[in-house]
Structure formats: structure tokens, C-alpha cells
Length: 142
Image 1 (cartoon, helix red, strand yellow):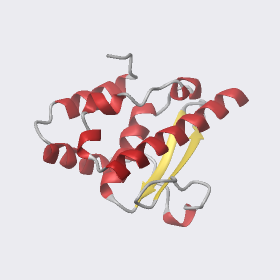
Image 2 (cartoon, rainbow, N blue to C red):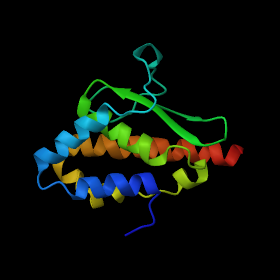
Image 3 (spheres, rainbow, N blue to C red):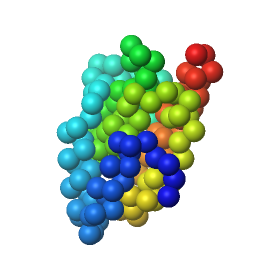
Image 4 (tube, rainbow, N blue to C red):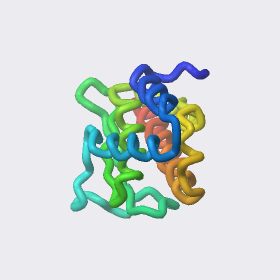
């Protein structure tokens, strides 16, 4: 097990307690409603679109007033919005350098990837890389 940020550890443990794929889907749908910073559709642009995602998904990374990382996002599919919410909640307020150094392996620990179609899993990894790359740029600028 890796040293995940505390909020992400809580999420990982919640998913580990699921006994099947349907329960994991239900939990993803619950997380879709918990997205802390929704990106309104009028702010969806080609620059913030997640490439390679079969759904329409958009993510913007920002810093809060204390320099903590925030993910603003939304998707046209609840499942994808749930994935965005997991990332947003999991890294909320962290220094960008910490976000940039995260590994996508937490998805394997949650056992979510097995519940996703290959194209959804690929889209999620693309989104994760997009967020990590933005965090790396932000930490270089700081």
C-alpha cells in the first residue's frame, strides 16, 4: 500500500468494502453528487476537455486562496462525474507538487478499473494524467 492522502485513503477503503461491481457503480453514482467544484457547461472548452474519454468530460485545475489544489469538473455521464469527484475529493487542498507525484495505482486498490469498460478506464487514466501534468506545471510556477 502506498502513502495516499487521507481523503483518498477513505475513498479507497469505501470501495474495498464493496462486494461486487454493482455496488461499486452505486458508490460511483453517489460520488457524482458529491463533486465539490462543478464546472458549468458554459465553461466547457476544448482546452479543458478530457481527451480519449468516451463521455463528454471537462476538468480545470485551480489553486485555492491558500495555494491548495482544486479540481473543477463535470461530465455528461454520472459514472464519469463520479470518477472526477473521487479525484477532486482525494486531492482537495494538497500542494500541487503532491498531486503531481501521485500514482494512478489507487484505482487498482479500489478495484474500480475492473468495473470499467476499457475505453472508460483509458479516459480515466487520461484525465488523471491531465490533472497530474497541470499540477506539475503549477508546482514549477510556484
